[in-house]
Image (cartoon, rainbow, N blue to C red; front, side, top):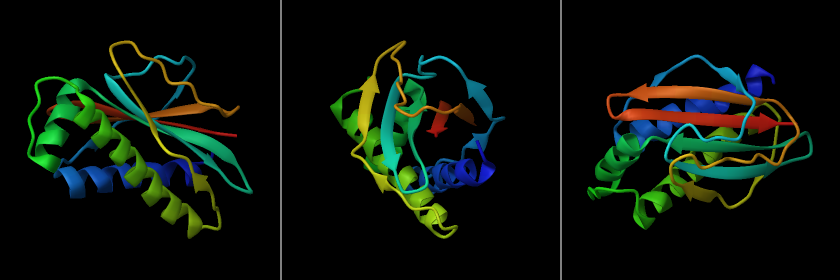
Length: 153
């Protein structure tokens, strides 16, 4: 997978979390992923399709980071992942994808976004409906980890 597809998602994730949740994340090292097990407790998954390619992207949060983002974004501090937290993760997924879409359009790549789907729970899975390599990018924070998975054909 080419960096020109991956980097806009990474930059958008950092921007969304910094701007919307006032959280600075530290990017880790990208890796390939071969299974469908999510690397956290709540995930937003969104499909993308365009003339040049199709793929999907997911954002997964560990519980502590998801709850802290909720507190910072909406002023609510639930003790557990609830419907409001899953809605917020869906919104973050939309914002990250929207930012990446804007960056990719500037390079001549255009795609449409589907409505995000959110899954929560220990050991949930993420099924990308594209036939391509899965790239995982971890982000660290004092409250836990977030992970972006990107899969493009």
